[in-house]
Length: 141
Image (cartoon, rainbow, N blue to C red; front, side, top):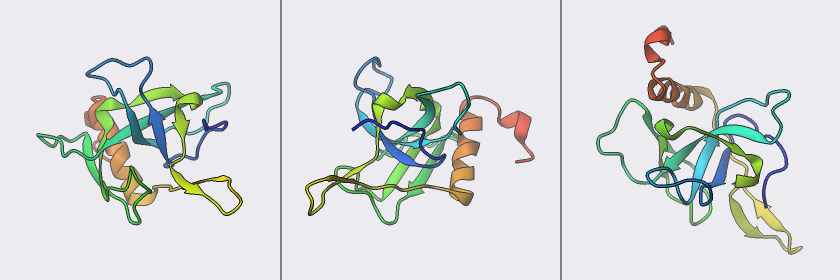
């Protein structure tokens, strides 16, 4: 079910890239991380960076290996997730869900809420700066 709210910065979500994107853009459901704060007057949009389980070849300054512990439920249960900051995108909440973990005893869907923060999130932010060519302006970071 699509999100109806702006997820907290650092929240891992599933983004449906199936509609409106064309190869070599992302074109399937992928884990992603919310990198934008909630802005006033910007309803129903947030900026995300997708993950991949495939090791980039070559690894560039806009890639980051995020090791999830614990892992998320299948099909997103790979411990190693490569952040692909060069694929940053602003998307509608309609594309986003939290990872689904099954149904509870009451029959209701259950979702996993995982938030990345601290040094790991800062490393992802540095990758974004590299991806959009702003790394030279912020070398003090």
